[in-house]
Image 1 (cartoon, rainbow, N blue to C red):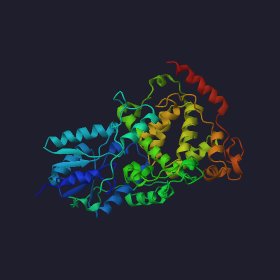
Image 2: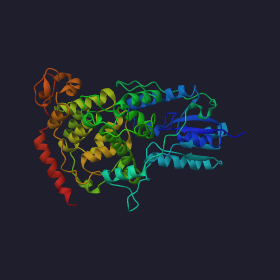
Image 3: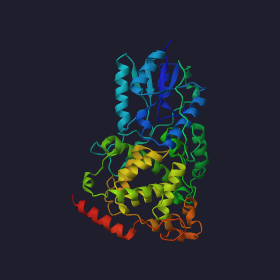
Image 4: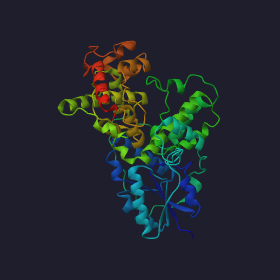
Length: 455
């Protein structure tokens, strides 16, 4: 009788379109489902992301008939011990290309090999795995548009034909470690694969033809409209795979589908950038920006606190920061506006804001978050972004023209009608005056950036 396999779930909390199941089925009929609660990954996660993860694990356990083994601890210790306990020769995973995940997997593979066992990586959380798309010089791409062309040319595999019945799931050898009850104030998405697939089925109805009617392509920048997919948290934890989404859009040729495919390419692009330059999780992609002066001290800390709590006096900024705290999520256009305000109006380093986002975002993804922040700050992969300073009033009027988004999240301003709600200094009771003057700080930011422009 063949030895059972271990399926070590990580960022692939689903049973459909999961290549690791096919890999395991090549040599085993039986498998143990394992998830390791890794303290190294929990530490930077806030309550919203931990609560959503716990919900996804409970949903996966239900889909497995209550046969998901959950262990807390260092995977280097836990995974080999579990494999030995059930007599498994192979442990199957989706490959992890992040800085920590790569180091962890190398250490786990070495520990398994000491006893003749193997860590088998099949697939990844991306449509095209990092490192697969290479420039003419053989390296990674710095410019997104060039990467996207190569990404389309490379293409992606069809979804894997898997479900709960692909393997016979054996009962865990002992009881799971309990998942902690997490007190979270944010209103989170319904967790799990079924919820992810239902959300996708509802959202993709606008892509089912070849027309260019108004929809995602035109409205995705409008935070006042429910025009985005809201799939980011599901993609983060692998409740859905982007390959499935791309397959479902294979016959959709309109602008809406093209724009959505491009957004999936951005996700793969940032993962590829981080794969080639893992130090950019903490450091500037463009080292010239290491010399950019930032504010510090008590006044800077006071401004940072005002930004974190949505008390800057700039309505669109404050609405976004309050949405983050209330939902563990923020509309992408507003992510850019709030990031620009922190880095170019308050002159604070991007990594302070990135850390705050990673603490509170339920969809917090290291590659997308860190490089999205660097794109806005000017130190990332964009060619010449130092002069891009978002005007919060102009951005608010353009993308929230009637002010509905601001009034939803900033109740102090609900008495101000229409687009006038975006003007700072309204004097509305309980709402703060602007903590800085945007026009003044924009010029100050450009002066700072000019000092490093020619380096």
